[in-house]
Length: 183
Image 1 (cartoon, rainbow, N blue to C red):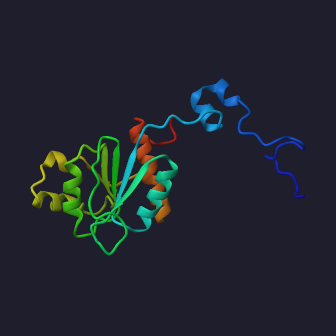
Image 2 (image 1 turned 30 degrees about the horizontal axis):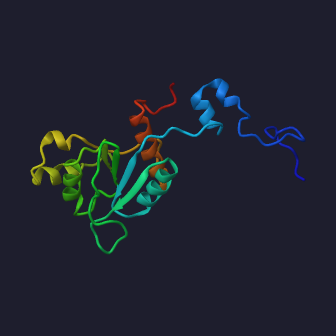
Image 3 (image 1 turned 180 degrees about the vertical axis):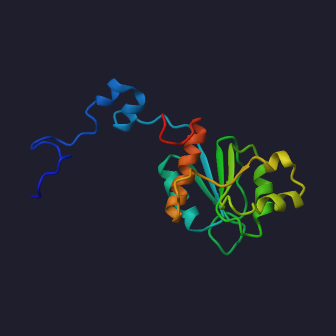
Protein backbone atom coordinates (compact mmCIF):
# COMPACT_ATOMS: atom_id res chain seq x y z
CA UNK A 1 0.00 0.00 0.00
CA UNK A 2 1.44 3.37 -1.01
CA UNK A 3 1.65 6.58 0.91
CA UNK A 4 -1.54 8.68 0.62
CA UNK A 5 -1.32 11.86 -1.40
CA UNK A 6 -3.06 15.16 -0.70
CA UNK A 7 -5.61 14.53 -3.46
CA UNK A 8 -6.36 10.92 -2.49
CA UNK A 9 -9.85 10.23 -1.11
CA UNK A 10 -10.09 9.53 2.62
CA UNK A 11 -9.60 5.94 3.71
CA UNK A 12 -12.72 3.88 3.04
CA UNK A 13 -14.14 6.41 0.56
CA UNK A 14 -15.57 4.92 -2.61
CA UNK A 15 -14.50 6.20 -6.02
CA UNK A 16 -17.02 8.63 -7.38
CA UNK A 17 -18.12 9.85 -10.76
CA UNK A 18 -19.34 13.01 -9.11
CA UNK A 19 -21.97 11.45 -6.89
CA UNK A 20 -24.78 13.48 -8.40
CA UNK A 21 -23.00 16.75 -7.65
CA UNK A 22 -23.10 17.72 -11.28
CA UNK A 23 -26.88 17.82 -11.53
CA UNK A 24 -27.06 20.52 -8.88
CA UNK A 25 -24.50 22.67 -10.69
CA UNK A 26 -26.11 22.55 -14.13
CA UNK A 27 -26.07 20.36 -17.23
CA UNK A 28 -22.45 20.99 -18.25
CA UNK A 29 -21.23 19.99 -14.82
CA UNK A 30 -23.49 16.92 -14.84
CA UNK A 31 -21.96 15.82 -18.16
CA UNK A 32 -18.42 16.42 -16.87
CA UNK A 33 -19.12 14.27 -13.82
CA UNK A 34 -20.67 11.50 -15.89
CA UNK A 35 -24.12 11.91 -14.34
CA UNK A 36 -25.83 12.43 -17.71
CA UNK A 37 -24.70 11.68 -21.27
CA UNK A 38 -23.48 14.53 -23.44
CA UNK A 39 -25.97 15.86 -25.97
CA UNK A 40 -23.55 15.96 -28.89
CA UNK A 41 -24.72 17.16 -32.29
CA UNK A 42 -23.60 15.25 -35.35
CA UNK A 43 -20.18 16.44 -36.47
CA UNK A 44 -17.82 15.33 -39.21
CA UNK A 45 -14.04 15.73 -39.23
CA UNK A 46 -12.12 15.21 -42.45
CA UNK A 47 -8.33 15.04 -42.35
CA UNK A 48 -6.80 15.56 -45.77
CA UNK A 49 -3.47 13.82 -46.50
CA UNK A 50 -2.27 10.86 -44.45
CA UNK A 51 0.45 11.46 -41.88
CA UNK A 52 1.15 11.72 -38.16
CA UNK A 53 -0.98 14.84 -37.58
CA UNK A 54 -3.90 13.28 -39.46
CA UNK A 55 -3.54 10.10 -37.38
CA UNK A 56 -3.85 12.07 -34.14
CA UNK A 57 -6.65 14.29 -35.48
CA UNK A 58 -8.75 11.29 -36.40
CA UNK A 59 -8.07 9.41 -33.16
CA UNK A 60 -8.80 12.39 -30.90
CA UNK A 61 -11.66 13.55 -33.13
CA UNK A 62 -13.40 10.19 -32.72
CA UNK A 63 -12.98 10.52 -28.94
CA UNK A 64 -14.72 13.91 -29.21
CA UNK A 65 -17.69 12.43 -31.06
CA UNK A 66 -16.77 13.35 -34.63
CA UNK A 67 -17.47 10.99 -37.52
CA UNK A 68 -13.98 10.88 -38.99
CA UNK A 69 -12.68 10.46 -42.53
CA UNK A 70 -9.20 10.43 -44.01
CA UNK A 71 -8.90 11.62 -47.59
CA UNK A 72 -5.68 11.20 -49.53
CA UNK A 73 -5.62 11.36 -53.35
CA UNK A 74 -2.40 9.30 -53.40
CA UNK A 75 -3.61 5.74 -53.96
CA UNK A 76 -0.41 4.42 -52.31
CA UNK A 77 -1.45 5.91 -48.97
CA UNK A 78 -4.25 5.13 -46.56
CA UNK A 79 -7.55 6.93 -46.93
CA UNK A 80 -10.23 7.45 -49.50
CA UNK A 81 -9.04 8.98 -52.75
CA UNK A 82 -12.17 11.08 -53.11
CA UNK A 83 -13.96 13.42 -50.76
CA UNK A 84 -17.19 12.08 -49.33
CA UNK A 85 -20.27 14.29 -49.68
CA UNK A 86 -19.93 16.93 -46.95
CA UNK A 87 -22.44 19.24 -45.29
CA UNK A 88 -22.51 22.08 -42.77
CA UNK A 89 -21.51 19.70 -39.94
CA UNK A 90 -18.11 19.10 -41.56
CA UNK A 91 -14.78 20.52 -40.44
CA UNK A 92 -11.93 19.88 -42.90
CA UNK A 93 -8.28 20.05 -41.85
CA UNK A 94 -5.56 19.83 -44.50
CA UNK A 95 -2.47 18.47 -42.77
CA UNK A 96 0.18 19.01 -45.46
CA UNK A 97 0.59 22.22 -47.45
CA UNK A 98 3.45 20.81 -49.56
CA UNK A 99 1.46 18.22 -51.49
CA UNK A 100 0.91 18.91 -55.21
CA UNK A 101 -2.78 17.94 -54.82
CA UNK A 102 -3.37 20.82 -52.37
CA UNK A 103 -5.12 23.11 -54.87
CA UNK A 104 -7.46 20.54 -56.44
CA UNK A 105 -8.42 19.04 -53.06
CA UNK A 106 -9.18 22.46 -51.55
CA UNK A 107 -11.09 23.50 -54.68
CA UNK A 108 -13.28 20.41 -54.29
CA UNK A 109 -13.78 21.02 -50.55
CA UNK A 110 -14.82 24.62 -51.22
CA UNK A 111 -17.61 23.49 -53.57
CA UNK A 112 -19.32 21.86 -50.58
CA UNK A 113 -21.11 23.64 -47.71
CA UNK A 114 -18.53 22.70 -45.06
CA UNK A 115 -18.63 24.56 -41.77
CA UNK A 116 -14.87 25.12 -41.53
CA UNK A 117 -11.77 24.45 -43.64
CA UNK A 118 -8.16 25.07 -42.71
CA UNK A 119 -4.64 24.33 -43.91
CA UNK A 120 -1.79 23.53 -41.56
CA UNK A 121 1.19 25.83 -41.98
CA UNK A 122 3.42 28.42 -40.40
CA UNK A 123 1.77 31.87 -40.54
CA UNK A 124 5.21 33.47 -41.07
CA UNK A 125 5.58 31.70 -44.44
CA UNK A 126 3.62 32.33 -47.64
CA UNK A 127 0.36 30.39 -47.87
CA UNK A 128 0.76 28.03 -50.86
CA UNK A 129 -2.97 27.35 -51.11
CA UNK A 130 -3.71 30.90 -52.26
CA UNK A 131 -1.78 30.80 -55.57
CA UNK A 132 -2.82 27.16 -56.13
CA UNK A 133 -6.51 28.04 -55.79
CA UNK A 134 -6.15 31.27 -57.78
CA UNK A 135 -4.58 29.31 -60.69
CA UNK A 136 -7.58 26.97 -60.62
CA UNK A 137 -9.98 29.92 -60.93
CA UNK A 138 -11.41 29.68 -57.41
CA UNK A 139 -13.08 33.00 -56.48
CA UNK A 140 -11.32 35.14 -53.87
CA UNK A 141 -14.34 34.92 -51.54
CA UNK A 142 -14.02 31.12 -51.48
CA UNK A 143 -10.26 31.27 -50.95
CA UNK A 144 -10.90 33.56 -47.96
CA UNK A 145 -12.91 30.75 -46.31
CA UNK A 146 -9.67 28.79 -45.81
CA UNK A 147 -8.15 29.29 -42.36
CA UNK A 148 -4.40 29.27 -41.90
CA UNK A 149 -2.83 28.47 -39.54
CA UNK A 150 -5.07 25.90 -37.90
CA UNK A 151 -5.75 25.59 -34.20
CA UNK A 152 -5.11 27.59 -31.08
CA UNK A 153 -1.70 29.15 -30.49
CA UNK A 154 -0.37 26.84 -27.78
CA UNK A 155 3.15 26.52 -29.17
CA UNK A 156 2.48 23.10 -30.70
CA UNK A 157 5.54 21.23 -31.88
CA UNK A 158 4.61 17.54 -32.11
CA UNK A 159 1.92 15.93 -34.28
CA UNK A 160 -0.17 15.17 -31.18
CA UNK A 161 0.10 18.78 -29.95
CA UNK A 162 -0.82 20.13 -33.39
CA UNK A 163 -3.88 17.86 -33.47
CA UNK A 164 -4.95 18.95 -29.97
CA UNK A 165 -4.53 22.63 -30.88
CA UNK A 166 -6.53 22.13 -34.09
CA UNK A 167 -9.36 20.30 -32.34
CA UNK A 168 -9.45 22.83 -29.49
CA UNK A 169 -9.70 25.60 -32.09
CA UNK A 170 -12.53 23.81 -33.88
CA UNK A 171 -14.43 23.33 -30.62
CA UNK A 172 -13.93 26.98 -29.64
CA UNK A 173 -15.03 28.18 -33.09
CA UNK A 174 -18.09 25.92 -33.13
CA UNK A 175 -19.09 27.19 -29.68
CA UNK A 176 -18.44 30.86 -30.50
CA UNK A 177 -15.62 31.12 -27.96
CA UNK A 178 -12.21 32.79 -28.29
CA UNK A 179 -10.32 29.72 -27.08
CA UNK A 180 -8.24 31.25 -24.30
CA UNK A 181 -8.22 31.19 -20.54
CA UNK A 182 -10.69 34.06 -20.18
CA UNK A 183 -14.27 32.99 -19.43
